[in-house]
Image (cartoon, rainbow, N blue to C red; front, side, top):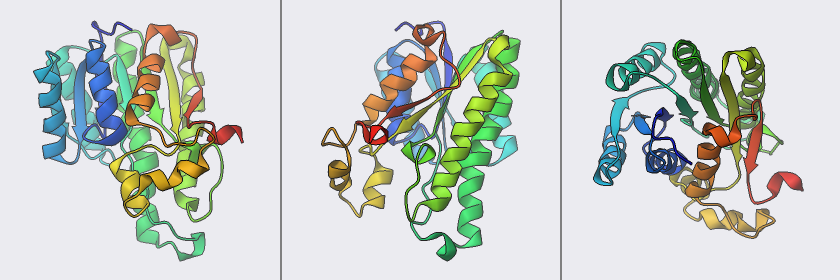
Length: 248
Protein backbone atom coordinates (compact mmCIF):
# COMPACT_ATOMS: atom_id res chain seq x y z
CA UNK A 1 0.00 0.00 0.00
CA UNK A 2 1.40 3.36 -1.06
CA UNK A 3 0.88 6.20 1.43
CA UNK A 4 3.68 8.36 0.06
CA UNK A 5 1.45 11.43 -0.34
CA UNK A 6 -0.08 11.13 3.13
CA UNK A 7 0.57 12.72 6.52
CA UNK A 8 -0.32 10.73 9.63
CA UNK A 9 -0.61 11.28 13.37
CA UNK A 10 -0.11 8.40 15.80
CA UNK A 11 -0.98 9.06 19.44
CA UNK A 12 0.76 6.85 21.98
CA UNK A 13 3.33 6.26 19.27
CA UNK A 14 6.27 5.64 21.58
CA UNK A 15 5.71 1.97 22.37
CA UNK A 16 3.69 -1.15 21.65
CA UNK A 17 0.98 -0.98 18.99
CA UNK A 18 1.50 2.76 18.45
CA UNK A 19 5.22 2.32 17.82
CA UNK A 20 4.65 -0.55 15.38
CA UNK A 21 1.97 1.41 13.55
CA UNK A 22 4.07 4.55 13.24
CA UNK A 23 6.85 2.48 11.69
CA UNK A 24 4.43 0.66 9.38
CA UNK A 25 2.88 3.93 8.18
CA UNK A 26 6.36 5.34 7.54
CA UNK A 27 7.37 2.17 5.68
CA UNK A 28 4.32 2.70 3.46
CA UNK A 29 5.60 6.19 2.67
CA UNK A 30 3.60 8.41 5.02
CA UNK A 31 5.09 11.32 6.91
CA UNK A 32 4.43 10.56 10.57
CA UNK A 33 3.92 12.71 13.64
CA UNK A 34 4.53 10.77 16.86
CA UNK A 35 2.48 12.00 19.81
CA UNK A 36 3.47 10.65 23.20
CA UNK A 37 3.82 11.72 26.82
CA UNK A 38 7.20 10.01 27.15
CA UNK A 39 9.66 12.17 25.23
CA UNK A 40 12.53 9.66 25.12
CA UNK A 41 10.40 6.88 23.64
CA UNK A 42 8.75 9.18 21.13
CA UNK A 43 12.05 10.60 19.91
CA UNK A 44 13.48 7.08 19.65
CA UNK A 45 10.75 6.09 17.19
CA UNK A 46 11.32 9.27 15.19
CA UNK A 47 15.03 8.49 14.89
CA UNK A 48 14.30 4.91 13.88
CA UNK A 49 12.00 6.09 11.09
CA UNK A 50 14.51 8.68 9.91
CA UNK A 51 17.32 6.10 9.93
CA UNK A 52 15.33 4.17 7.33
CA UNK A 53 14.84 7.23 5.13
CA UNK A 54 11.37 8.16 6.39
CA UNK A 55 10.07 11.50 7.61
CA UNK A 56 8.85 11.88 11.18
CA UNK A 57 8.64 14.40 14.01
CA UNK A 58 7.73 14.16 17.68
CA UNK A 59 5.21 16.25 19.61
CA UNK A 60 4.84 15.74 23.37
CA UNK A 61 1.10 15.27 23.92
CA UNK A 62 -1.29 14.38 26.69
CA UNK A 63 -4.45 13.45 24.78
CA UNK A 64 -6.64 14.33 27.78
CA UNK A 65 -5.62 18.01 27.42
CA UNK A 66 -7.44 19.95 24.70
CA UNK A 67 -4.70 22.54 24.20
CA UNK A 68 -2.08 19.83 23.71
CA UNK A 69 -4.19 17.94 21.17
CA UNK A 70 -4.92 21.16 19.28
CA UNK A 71 -1.19 21.95 19.31
CA UNK A 72 -0.45 18.47 17.94
CA UNK A 73 -2.70 18.96 14.94
CA UNK A 74 -1.44 22.50 14.36
CA UNK A 75 2.19 21.32 14.49
CA UNK A 76 1.40 18.55 12.00
CA UNK A 77 -0.04 21.04 9.52
CA UNK A 78 2.73 23.59 10.04
CA UNK A 79 5.41 20.94 9.41
CA UNK A 80 3.82 18.90 6.62
CA UNK A 81 1.00 21.06 5.25
CA UNK A 82 -1.95 18.74 5.85
CA UNK A 83 -3.38 15.81 7.81
CA UNK A 84 -4.67 12.70 6.04
CA UNK A 85 -4.48 9.83 8.56
CA UNK A 86 -4.81 9.55 12.34
CA UNK A 87 -4.39 6.53 14.57
CA UNK A 88 -5.84 7.42 17.96
CA UNK A 89 -4.04 4.81 20.00
CA UNK A 90 -3.06 6.43 23.31
CA UNK A 91 -4.67 4.69 26.26
CA UNK A 92 -4.25 3.16 29.71
CA UNK A 93 -5.75 0.03 31.25
CA UNK A 94 -6.41 1.26 34.80
CA UNK A 95 -6.94 -0.88 37.90
CA UNK A 96 -7.98 -4.52 37.51
CA UNK A 97 -10.55 -4.65 40.29
CA UNK A 98 -14.27 -5.41 40.64
CA UNK A 99 -16.41 -2.36 39.87
CA UNK A 100 -17.31 -1.53 43.49
CA UNK A 101 -13.62 -1.50 44.47
CA UNK A 102 -12.55 1.04 41.85
CA UNK A 103 -11.60 4.50 43.10
CA UNK A 104 -13.18 7.62 41.66
CA UNK A 105 -9.73 9.08 40.96
CA UNK A 106 -8.61 6.06 38.92
CA UNK A 107 -11.89 5.86 37.01
CA UNK A 108 -11.82 9.55 36.14
CA UNK A 109 -8.23 9.30 34.89
CA UNK A 110 -8.96 6.24 32.76
CA UNK A 111 -12.03 7.80 31.17
CA UNK A 112 -10.18 11.08 30.57
CA UNK A 113 -7.44 9.32 28.61
CA UNK A 114 -9.36 6.52 26.89
CA UNK A 115 -12.63 8.29 26.05
CA UNK A 116 -12.10 12.03 26.30
CA UNK A 117 -8.69 11.58 24.66
CA UNK A 118 -10.19 9.88 21.61
CA UNK A 119 -12.96 12.47 21.42
CA UNK A 120 -10.51 15.38 21.61
CA UNK A 121 -8.24 13.77 19.04
CA UNK A 122 -11.09 13.27 16.58
CA UNK A 123 -12.46 16.76 17.27
CA UNK A 124 -9.29 18.48 16.07
CA UNK A 125 -8.36 15.90 13.44
CA UNK A 126 -11.76 16.05 11.76
CA UNK A 127 -11.75 19.85 11.70
CA UNK A 128 -8.46 19.74 9.80
CA UNK A 129 -9.45 16.86 7.52
CA UNK A 130 -12.55 18.75 6.43
CA UNK A 131 -10.20 21.39 5.03
CA UNK A 132 -8.46 18.65 3.00
CA UNK A 133 -11.75 17.23 1.68
CA UNK A 134 -11.29 13.97 3.54
CA UNK A 135 -9.11 11.63 5.49
CA UNK A 136 -9.04 8.36 7.42
CA UNK A 137 -9.18 7.92 11.19
CA UNK A 138 -8.59 4.67 13.05
CA UNK A 139 -9.30 4.48 16.78
CA UNK A 140 -7.80 1.83 19.00
CA UNK A 141 -10.66 0.04 20.72
CA UNK A 142 -10.23 -3.53 21.98
CA UNK A 143 -11.94 -6.87 22.30
CA UNK A 144 -13.04 -5.25 25.57
CA UNK A 145 -15.06 -2.86 23.40
CA UNK A 146 -16.94 -5.80 21.90
CA UNK A 147 -17.51 -8.06 24.92
CA UNK A 148 -17.48 -7.90 28.72
CA UNK A 149 -14.73 -9.14 31.05
CA UNK A 150 -14.74 -9.33 34.87
CA UNK A 151 -12.45 -6.99 36.86
CA UNK A 152 -12.13 -4.82 33.75
CA UNK A 153 -15.49 -3.04 34.06
CA UNK A 154 -14.26 0.54 33.63
CA UNK A 155 -11.78 -0.30 30.87
CA UNK A 156 -14.53 -2.28 29.14
CA UNK A 157 -16.88 0.68 29.44
CA UNK A 158 -14.25 3.00 27.96
CA UNK A 159 -13.55 0.73 25.01
CA UNK A 160 -17.28 0.27 24.34
CA UNK A 161 -17.44 4.07 24.26
CA UNK A 162 -14.67 4.15 21.66
CA UNK A 163 -16.49 1.55 19.54
CA UNK A 164 -19.76 3.49 19.75
CA UNK A 165 -18.13 6.87 19.15
CA UNK A 166 -16.41 5.42 16.09
CA UNK A 167 -19.73 4.29 14.62
CA UNK A 168 -21.54 7.55 15.29
CA UNK A 169 -18.74 9.77 14.02
CA UNK A 170 -18.40 7.61 10.90
CA UNK A 171 -22.05 8.27 10.08
CA UNK A 172 -21.71 11.98 10.76
CA UNK A 173 -18.86 12.41 8.28
CA UNK A 174 -19.53 9.62 5.77
CA UNK A 175 -20.56 12.08 3.05
CA UNK A 176 -17.70 14.47 3.73
CA UNK A 177 -14.88 12.15 2.73
CA UNK A 178 -13.74 11.11 6.20
CA UNK A 179 -13.72 7.39 6.99
CA UNK A 180 -13.65 6.49 10.68
CA UNK A 181 -12.96 2.95 11.84
CA UNK A 182 -11.43 1.16 14.81
CA UNK A 183 -9.33 -1.88 15.51
CA UNK A 184 -10.13 -4.26 18.36
CA UNK A 185 -6.90 -5.92 19.45
CA UNK A 186 -6.94 -9.06 21.54
CA UNK A 187 -3.94 -10.00 23.70
CA UNK A 188 -0.92 -8.40 22.02
CA UNK A 189 2.72 -8.64 23.10
CA UNK A 190 3.15 -5.09 24.39
CA UNK A 191 4.68 -3.49 27.50
CA UNK A 192 1.13 -2.76 28.73
CA UNK A 193 0.14 -6.43 28.60
CA UNK A 194 3.42 -7.47 30.17
CA UNK A 195 2.71 -5.26 33.18
CA UNK A 196 -0.92 -6.39 33.34
CA UNK A 197 0.07 -10.07 33.41
CA UNK A 198 2.86 -9.68 35.94
CA UNK A 199 5.59 -10.13 33.35
CA UNK A 200 4.29 -13.00 31.21
CA UNK A 201 1.99 -11.77 28.40
CA UNK A 202 2.10 -15.23 26.81
CA UNK A 203 0.07 -16.54 29.73
CA UNK A 204 -2.94 -15.31 27.72
CA UNK A 205 -2.19 -17.72 24.87
CA UNK A 206 -4.67 -20.30 26.13
CA UNK A 207 -7.40 -17.67 25.92
CA UNK A 208 -6.89 -17.29 22.15
CA UNK A 209 -8.29 -19.83 19.63
CA UNK A 210 -5.14 -19.51 17.51
CA UNK A 211 -3.10 -20.58 20.55
CA UNK A 212 -0.84 -17.54 20.77
CA UNK A 213 -0.94 -13.84 21.52
CA UNK A 214 -0.56 -11.33 18.72
CA UNK A 215 2.32 -9.13 17.67
CA UNK A 216 2.05 -5.32 17.51
CA UNK A 217 2.91 -5.49 13.82
CA UNK A 218 -0.22 -7.53 13.16
CA UNK A 219 -2.40 -4.74 14.53
CA UNK A 220 -0.31 -2.17 12.67
CA UNK A 221 -0.98 -3.94 9.38
CA UNK A 222 -4.73 -3.68 10.01
CA UNK A 223 -4.44 0.02 10.80
CA UNK A 224 -2.44 0.70 7.64
CA UNK A 225 -5.05 -1.13 5.56
CA UNK A 226 -7.95 0.76 7.15
CA UNK A 227 -6.05 4.01 6.54
CA UNK A 228 -5.41 3.27 2.89
CA UNK A 229 -7.51 3.49 -0.27
CA UNK A 230 -7.68 -0.31 -0.21
CA UNK A 231 -10.37 0.18 2.47
CA UNK A 232 -12.14 2.98 0.61
CA UNK A 233 -15.65 1.53 1.20
CA UNK A 234 -15.11 0.66 4.88
CA UNK A 235 -16.33 3.03 7.59
CA UNK A 236 -17.91 2.67 11.02
CA UNK A 237 -16.35 -0.75 11.52
CA UNK A 238 -14.39 -2.13 14.46
CA UNK A 239 -12.03 -4.78 13.10
CA UNK A 240 -11.04 -7.44 15.67
CA UNK A 241 -7.37 -8.40 15.50
CA UNK A 242 -7.61 -11.05 18.12
CA UNK A 243 -6.78 -14.53 16.88
CA UNK A 244 -10.47 -15.47 16.99
CA UNK A 245 -11.33 -14.44 20.57
CA UNK A 246 -14.50 -12.55 19.68
CA UNK A 247 -15.67 -15.36 17.39
CA UNK A 248 -16.15 -17.66 20.38
